[in-house]
Structure formats: C-alpha cells, structure tokens
Image 1 (cartoon, rainbow, N blue to C red):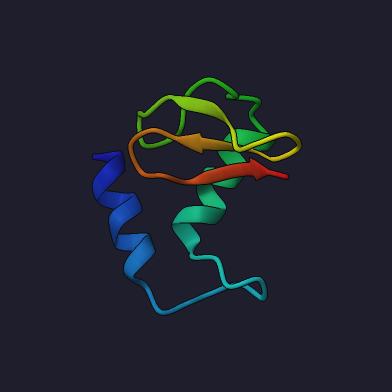
Image 2 (spheres, rainbow, N blue to C red):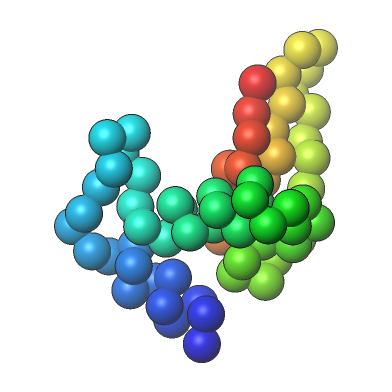
Length: 70
C-alpha cells in the first residue's frame, strides 16, 4: 500500500525548489527525522556504497532513493 502511495506522489507535477518530488520528501523525512537509517519507507534496505577514495553514496536497494552522498 505504501508503494502505491509513493508511486502516486512521485507522479504529481509538484516539485520543491530543489527539484524533488513529494515521495522523495516523504522518504527524506522518514530517513532523517524518524532515524530509520536501516530501512527505506518503500521497504528496501539502505546500503552504503563506496565509490573510490573519498566518495560514497547511501542508497535504497529497491527504489534507488539517495539518502546521502559525498
């Protein structure tokens, strides 16, 4: 059910000033404000990927939402 809601929120034409959809804003709230650093709102797991010497990405394994990057 939550995936259906996230899918519908992602299709709305509304975007924030940073260009993110409402579904991404909801996932961002879930990750940062509710401190769910191991699971994404869609049900996928949040994984850490190293991309070289000084670069990394924290990303969902299912919806590929990027929670943090450097």
